[in-house]
Image (cartoon, rainbow, N blue to C red; front, side, top):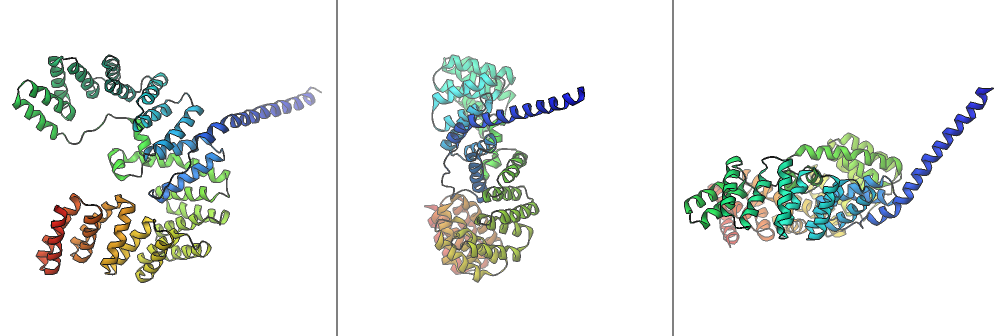
Length: 494
């Protein structure tokens, strides 16, 4: 008899607990909804972004607007925007994250960095102070606050923060240098000199101390030591900021290769990509009809160099969301990565049949045809892509490369020049292309690339390439190219 009464009682307890958990989740979601909606930035113009990054921004925006994994979705957006200098968008997302996770010091720290970029010194100070309240033992915060206070003319307050920094990071050159600057501001030249001499002895690769010590020696009339410190400063290499793991993690989301190279930790980007994977996998589970989510997951697999997983994912996405042209384009990319060029062409042609006005599909088809040796066909396809979307950088770039290899240098130059105008950072790729052509003795192709660089991105690389090209042309005895490169060299020197 007792067992009969216990079973319904146990069931009732389970039902009550489940109901309470369900109610708590519903209440949490209801409370978060207005915060999340206010924190989702409108998607800015992403034409200059690599396609895989733009795809993931759109997918994270859609997930946040659906209130799916709101913290994870907003975190994706905050990191993408912050790392690529979209300050207003990152600030909007970070303010939302701070409201959702008020005890997470990383959001206030990122907000301080955003305020610094926006020249909002009071906001920067407020968020740095809040970061210290939440995480008092993170050393970079002390250093940043000290430097800000010194700029604001508050040396006494700055001194406290520099001393905190030195307690957390003993013998730190950044903290010691800050104290030396304060001593110099107060007129304690002897104390500053002694501190700076100690820093350059303990940290000979710290250029700022050499520079300031040089100035101190110069003001006392010790020209020889001033020159020596100036020389030592130039021999230390590029100046590097203090280690900052939180910001390094954020900037691993950048698509700027220069910034990634200077982050000093290539493994960090790989770890960041891996950590993003569960968010996108969950996004397609929660919204299986969302083509953006499938495309973003496929793009992420490509970034992780897992083309087999990308192909499987994108094919599944097309079966669930066939009305999404981006899936055809990304699947074509994944198949090319696998070496399945013919199949990639077939997929892209199917995509064009379904979306005839989508320029990116024609751009990818043209590039794939050119890769397969079908350059004449590729030119026609790429010209149509340019007609459909005149600001599509990739279409101008691929058309220029294709025309260059067909020997149509004049038309190639016009297309490559337009590509550089749309995305100036492509200049590095064009420099590499010119160098490769010179190595192979292909003076016409090299000349086309250098002319484009000289006109659209003038500077040292174009000048150096023109000088090298002239030497190669003289060695080859090509009088026409010699005359062309002599004229080009004159132009690049102006």
